[in-house]
Length: 85
Image (cartoon, rainbow, N blue to C red; front, side):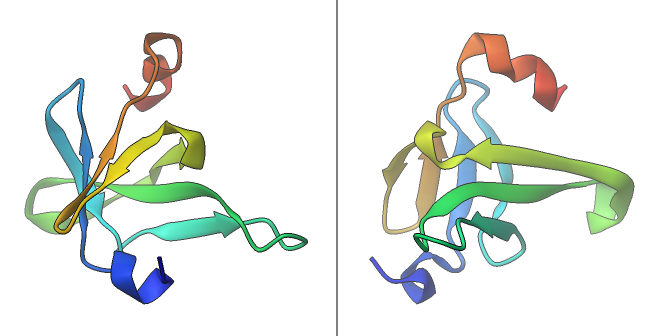
């Protein structure tokens, strides 16, 4: 899959049934040596899309369970969920 094919897909947490963002409004952490994507960095948004200062969610690539035509499904283990609250 090409990076251009990922753009515009919604990122959804399957356990929380919550939309976290849209790929394209996120940053990617990439391993400079291998070129592999290590994680998605999703800015947290307030009402009307105004950013919270310094708030972001970092989702390791291993937690991505499915990439569909319209969305990316992530599943974060319970022990790591506290980082998102």
